[in-house]
Length: 152
Image (cartoon, rainbow, N blue to C red):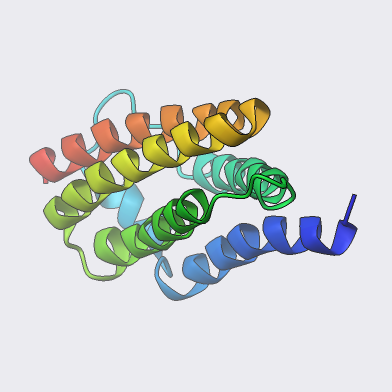
């Protein structure tokens, strides 16, 4: 096991997500609390907990893919692209208040996550399956984003 490579694979999404939180979602709790939300909307504290967990799992999956002899450049490009879209969403939704655009962007994000999981699965079954909670969370978040867009 290459611990430095593992740390890098996990820290990029975790630290990146934290930095996005600092720059894009300043006052996000206050913004989120003021929005008209559907009954299924979770409290604001659940998001950092969920995202830190998901980013960690994603990083481990990426590490496993990068460690394989049958490394796939397309799988890694999909991963990097979806991670970039993931980070962009917070700017769209919170910083710029573009909730409809954020919804469309998240639909594209979900597509890329699913493609990434499929490509990961072809290389390493565990890595592909590790992306399933991320797919589930973003599917939920897509519905939440749409409801908030519609209600506000």
